[in-house]
Picture 1 (cartoon, protein in one colour):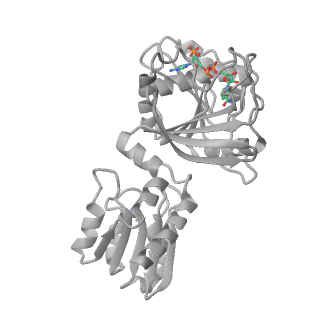
Picture 2: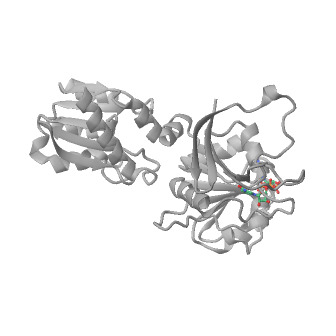
Picture 3: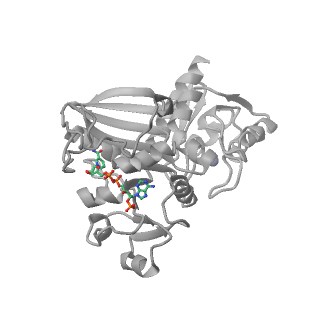
Length: 361
Ligand code: NDP
Ligand code: ZN
């Protein structure tokens, strides 16, 4: 129905309000409509707080009886931190529930809809499914793989350099592009760089936006734990820092780094395997990871095929030089047949720079 799409679009707009702050939960929106009138609206804003349906049904009150509920994700059917929304909709005696997409968790998928149908409620599935899946692609990836959704980000000159041959990289892209990067930081659970980037740039790796925004957990891959103790990520407590180290690092050395905001995480092997590390982050409820380089780190993620999206900024500048680093370093591949194949999802201007979003084919 045409009006179904209209109200579902509104529910998606509601869902977007919570987008980026509901982790490890999905962003969900709900709209209650009775006789062509909107009587309830709801968005899930934070894990542990009421689900979108709860807000919307509360707002609708008595009017929920006989109404149609539009919800961007299948209503939950299990007791989590809050009681199941499917039961709430049954109790509120709604007549019809329109759902954009099912819960990807195989343990819950379909169960919410089943509960509604058993109670005699008409259920419609699939209205604006693509938009709803796109909105929660991070959550869906995490739920189905138990590893974070990985975004590789880099800023390069038009000739594909991420620093000069001396390692200077401040700044390649414009302020507008850098602000865009900070928006990704705010939206991700964690941000990751290699120890060489810490040595070269001593970054804070925090979110600095005019409108504010949370700083993600800072993750540093540092096999032998050689990050200087005075590095900004260790000495300032604006955000949590997790140092990932190899099995050979002594407990005495690790103890030197312990701070209330610093945690040292030791792998079982002497080197840091990307997939092992991602599984570990998944166990610690990191659903999204923003990888900011440098080039050796990107190479490891690309070779492991451990990424879901690439965000690349190209500044209208030329750096040149064989020795200036490129976004993906390492030894590279030998034949084109081995290249990581991508599809371009979007291209846009950010100030004077070009932003390209690509996904693996
Ligand atoms: P990286 O920052 O990529 O760090 C690489 C180091 O991380 C390795 O040498 C290694 O050191 C450690 N490491 C631990 N585990 C792994 C793993 N699994 N895979 C890869 N590395 C691992 O270093 P680069 O020298 O490549 O890049 C740094 C340069 O890049 C700087 O000049 C910086 O300015 C620039 N840069 C530019 C950016 C841009 O977008 N323009 C963004 C980020 C950096 P160890 O063995 O000791 O653990
Ligand atoms: Zn729910």
